[in-house]
Length: 152
Image (tube, rainbow, N blue to C red; front, top):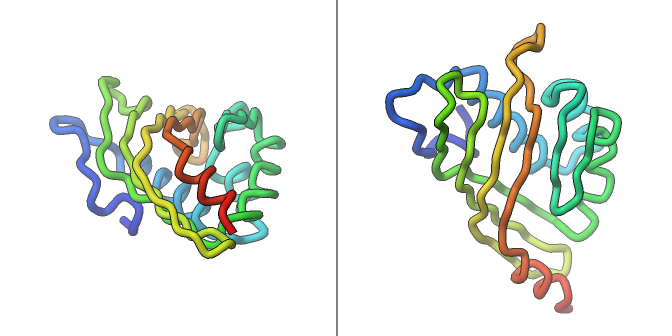
């Protein structure tokens, strides 16, 4: 596994499939990289056709909206790195995961912001090419980011 999930604490007594862990890892690698094809990777490889991604408070529904979701993702951000700290589930098939994570961001105005947030992944296991994301949703305190973005 890679940088974003290596040190995470996973639920005891449940075998989270390696394909699900790889999917989560690839998701964070994609959103943490400023690349022109990030939206295409999310839409074509990581999300189910009816998937929903909440980036901030805005939901992007379906693969065409998800494809466009990264267009302005790097307008104010220079660097971004997510790290999953702990994962929780009560679903025996491990298709509904809650997590605590940390994100560190370097802003284009030279400021740095980091903090913890919580999120949820739901996984669709009915896809012919392996598991895909049905839902990505996060909740966190964005006040430090908003303040840092206003500074010069």
